[in-house]
Image (tube, rainbow, N blue to C red; front, top):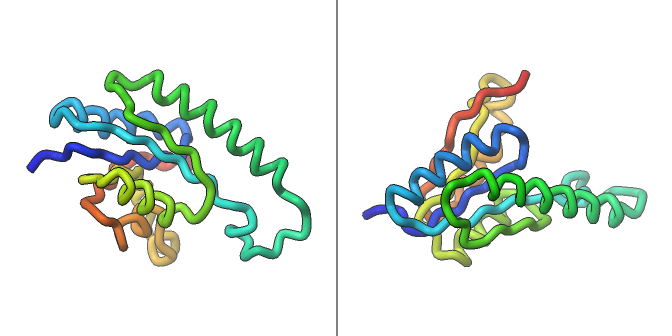
Length: 145
């Protein structure tokens, strides 16, 4: 059965367009719907809640920047985008939530194909795979290092 409801999770780096183009091609091939999500990991969440300063202004700026980058990404795609979501929280949790809310058939994420210690510690793609409500496609992107 073809994928009809695709959720694309992006980190909004320059490599996001490579992953987005794969998701767009699948939407074209299967006449599917595309929802794009970007998750801003809460600074409180990332640092275990022990941030000694008010980070609300920083979080607001991150939201604004992410929304602008999302618009640029959407404008580069040659398929209609059903919805874009810029949210805050745990990356894997939010991606799973949006996939469930959209009754997604497929989640598409980028993978840097890390090895060694980074592989042992896990990655976002690996985190999304475990507990996903649907299939997950990890698109290999070259690391910038």
